[in-house]
Length: 369
Ligand code: NAD
Image (cartoon, rainbow, N blue to C red; front, side, top):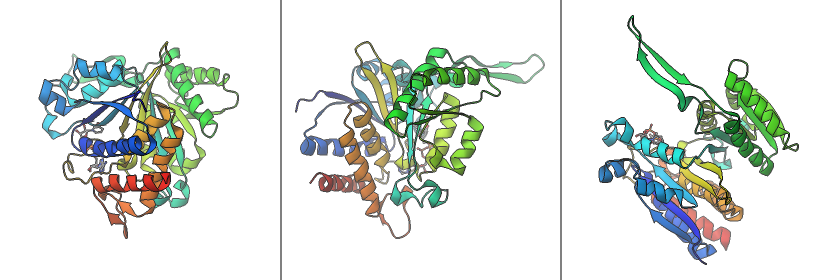
């Protein structure tokens, strides 16, 4: 089949290349067994790009990222680059990718696979079967609003300012992503803010309500962010899709993520809106970082990256059947008792990153037989 699906691979630093190596294995499997081929380029981002080019993201890499269908990223950073100048540090490359590609909607699923339901910090019955999608606005709000500064006070001490700011279009577009996803899932959307104490919350609630009129079949709920945090640890299965701002989304998605077990299992997608030609930019990456403590030891869990690739198929290529196949293979490989160190439990079989990737492809073989 013609390779018309363009992917940019950015493995990055630490365990990034190891886990992305296993994603390549899955892509090779798809090529051979499903006859789906991808046109793949690979490039540098983060610390390895600093070493090679003295910047964590070159203009050329950014240009490639802007012209592919999806970017697949490993992880960036590590102690080697902790003291480089702030504007070239590894994370700066990531932030630039997100900003210049206008990736405003960060999708973070929190799914509790059956074999992992006893790995959660919550009681099994609270999380078994959990399937939440958190949509976090990721280019606005308190992390980017101006003014943003620390200034000296005349009498000594300093004053720090971050600005929480949102416009109607920024809220509209991310809420639409939330409503669309809810329509494809359980039909329920929680819009989360702090309208009781924040003006951005008041506007957020107004806009979400207005957009909701376009989606009469979606059951829209408004919830304060502090209550949402409590509800996530009290009764997480009440949620289907949650849409919220950058700051609250950062915290709530990490909180929801931990309900499911381990960092090494968590995928994410970040999407732009569609341009005039209907094209949507997207970046897929595991939630975890570069794990310098285990880098190079073939111990990393590749499943978050592999699940991120499944999200690529689902959201960038409309290949839900193939995405389901990979999700099922992950479920099966865990049910078989295979575990990397981060998710190891009594009585299970400890495997390497490479072995986990191989075993996943064995499960894919069985499913496709
Ligand atoms: P981390 O996610 O890299 O690691 C936290 C802990 O989880 C470590 O003990 C690590 O071994 C373990 N872990 C993480 N992913 C794992 C996996 N796939 N399999 C097995 N174990 C895994 O977070 P950190 O230690 O706070 O940060 C390390 C570096 O990563 C820092 O330089 C940080 O800036 C960077 N970072 C990058 C990203 C990103 O690229 N998006 C995200 C977070 C942190």
